[in-house]
Length: 188
Image (tube, rainbow, N blue to C red; front, side):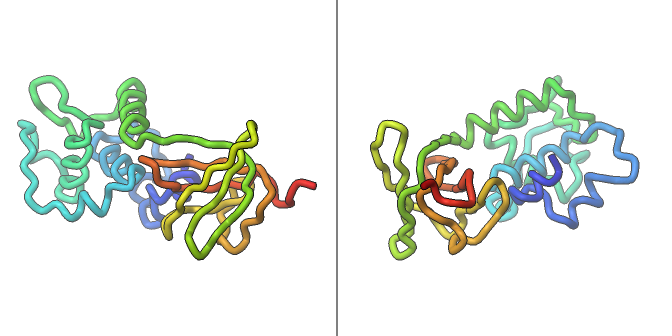
């Protein structure tokens, strides 16, 4: 899970000391979950740009200063809500049931769409990829400079991608965020 979070940019190497200690048997605290979820959703820049934070939780002063913008983000996105009595309870442990609810809300908020097919063409000039589905229909998708490319789950540069291989495409809100080729050699 940690490697995946590093891969997705939700954790950095410097975050490891914060979230993973020699003995991290304690559950994650709610404010820690707010930070990681914000990063996993790609909302860190937006969260940190917000300077006028006005949280209405009764225990707002218990939220660590470095987590305030993240708590604001997940609250505004509807991912995390207050506990009983309009309290955020930032230092309380996150229960499994709460984490399951938060993750379901993240999936709904990000609107991921998964497409599988054969990677037929990569047009670097127009930043498009063409995928052929199992019915033989082709669709062109635009990628961005932020799109991640991988071969069999291993991150790679766009220049290393090859065509005529099966691929899984992940879209978020209509934008290609990941192209993962399922083979390193083209089909014969």
